[in-house]
Each structure stands twice: as C-alpha cells, then as structure tokens.
Image 1 (cartoon, rainbow, N blue to C red):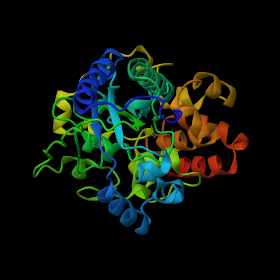
Image 2 (cartoon, helix red, strand yellow):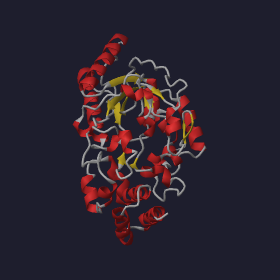
Image 3 (cartoon, rainbow, N blue to C red):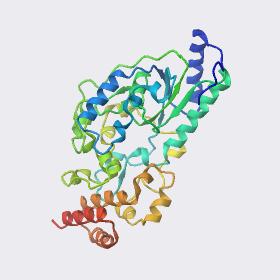
Image 4 (cartoon, helix red, strand yellow):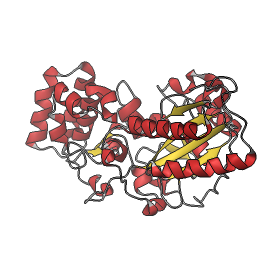
Length: 361
C-alpha cells in the first residue's frame, strides 16, 4: 500500500519509539511469538548471495538471481522503504512419536514438519495485513507492503538484523529461546522506526547440523549447496533425482528436517498454538504405501490448502518411489511399484524402475 503525499504528519522520535512498542504488542496479540525492526542495509547478505549464486549452489532455482538487487535492496522492491518489521511464528506440532524416530521406520513417510498442516503463507499474510491496518488506524495512511515468501525478500538476513535470532551453520535462523521451528514474515514500511539490535551467534564450536546432514549438503559452516539438499531434491528439482543421492533420501518424501531435529538449540523450541499448523490427513503417521496409493485426484483433494500441493502429483510419486526403493522389499511394496509402473509418467517410471532394481539386489 502506498499513501498519498503528506497523508500523515511527521512523527516525533518519541512517538516512533512508542509506536514500535505498540507494534510489538499488537503483533504478539495476533499470534506472532516475536516482532523486531531492522534497517534496510543488507550489503553483507548481498555479497553472500552473489558468491552463492556464482558458485551455482542454487541449482534449478533460477528465481534466486532473477530479480537482481531487488532482493537485497528493499527500497528497490518497494519504494520509500526505510525499515522492515520482521516477525516469527512457531509451527512445530505436538507429536506423540519423536519425529527423529520416523527416520528409522523405513515403511513410514517423513514429511517436513512445516508442511504437515495448512500452508502458512495465507495465514501469516492475513495477520501481517491486520498488523499494518492497526498501525494505519493509529497514525493514518503510510507506505507498506506485506511479504511472506511471496517476493524476492531476504527473510533470514532481515530477521537476524531485527534481533529475532542468528543464522546458524545450517543457514536457518536460530533463536536461543525458541530454536528454529518457526516461520518468518515481513512488512516493508516507510516509517523511520527505531531499530532492534542483532543478537550474538551462539553456535560456537557445535557442528551437529553439518555432521547429521544425510547428503552432506552443508559443505562448510554457513554454506549450503542446495543441489545436494533433500529439501531441494524433493521440492524444487523438476527432473530426475541424481542416482547417487537417491539412497541418501531414506524415507524423506517432502523436505528434510535433520539439521533442525538434532540441533541442540531446538530443545528450547515451543509447540505451535495454531490449529492450522497441526497435521492433516495423517501425514505425520502415514505409511509410504498409503500415500503411494493416492491417485492424482486424491492428491489434489487432500493437499488442498497445503504447501505440498505446489510440487504436483508427479513429483509426489517420484519422491515416494525413491523412498520405497530405500526400504524393505516386501511383497506389498513390489506389487505397488509394479502396478504403478505402466500408468506413470516417464519421470516417475524411471524412479520406479530404480526402486525395483534396489529392492531386487
């Protein structure tokens, strides 16, 4: 939203300080666990992004470099932006079985915890819009734009500057009191709000995330080669999953949480209070065979309102075929793969054939 010229009077430093306090209170009332404010200087993040792209670590994610400096220079994306309101919202659901235990049950499907419930984008965008409207109701029209993974925005770098946490060695944001199981969102504003101080990095000498990464995608502290990351392979990659990496996926069919599951800081993580983030359609307990049995119509119906829907049925089948190939060779598994083979797309057929070869070894 862009205001008309001179739509509001200039706010004094004292009023801006008070307003910032109010914004944080309103944000928490709307369900955000933390609210912070940062400036727009992302020069460090810009250099890191440039080096990352130059190394080709983005793989097929061409959109990461598509918008040039709009990603790292907020005022180019939304004119007159001088501050960014950054928020985080917990998403980890309460589960009877520790998620890490699922990785040792090859017949069960592992879905990244963030995708077990409804897609977070709409919920968080709606809450951020309400926050912006509350600000406007108090001070009058102002320039702002809400973002939740919806444009070229450096959410983690912004959140780090806003004091919401620090970027860990796995490149996710970490918070001392809440771990890393949370979503991020932003409001770009033209208000010169007082900024928060960044927190210190508390990873120390720990490199658990590096050690547990199944595909060694974390090639060095704070450096992720997305081309090896299971989240990239199961969500972003459009074609064939590299043969040498398929056995390393285990039973992970959508995303990978290992670097979070085993991070010591996540012992402080809080479970979500949002009903929309709770598991749907038994995704937290489903077997691979149950999910592989879904036809395209069932997939689209069950994944309505889910982040998983965007990968499409073909990738869903591809991922599950690989996971089945990594498990035990039961009669039921072999029959399911063989029955699906004649009716699958060439991409899925390739992965089913690989799975059958694995199971017949």
